[in-house]
Length: 87
Image 1 (cartoon, helix red, strand yellow):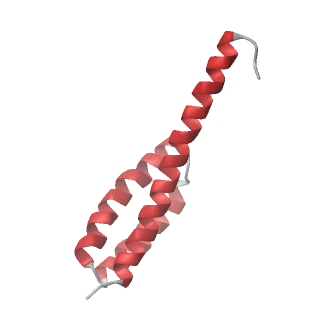
Image 2 (image 1 turned 90 degrees about the vertical axis):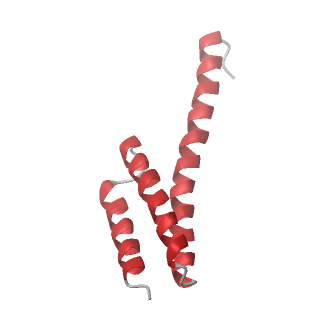
Image 3 (image 1 turned 180 degrees about the vertical axis):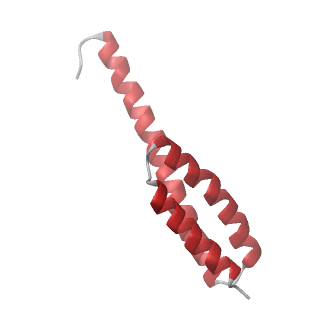
């Protein structure tokens, strides 16, 4: 444990940022998973709403450097193609 007051505060700040970053990464992964489930269940309305949320949070993750641009583009492309081909 740090003894200096500024170091103690830095530990708290780092922990808070780590939690926020982890939450965003998990949100993107869960949205991808939920979108796949909605596609498997043939629920086009829910799949499109989840896909819109996914676009927002995935782009935010890219801008913060949590995910690579190509990875996000690939995931979005695959999901949009699946949604487009749904009956």
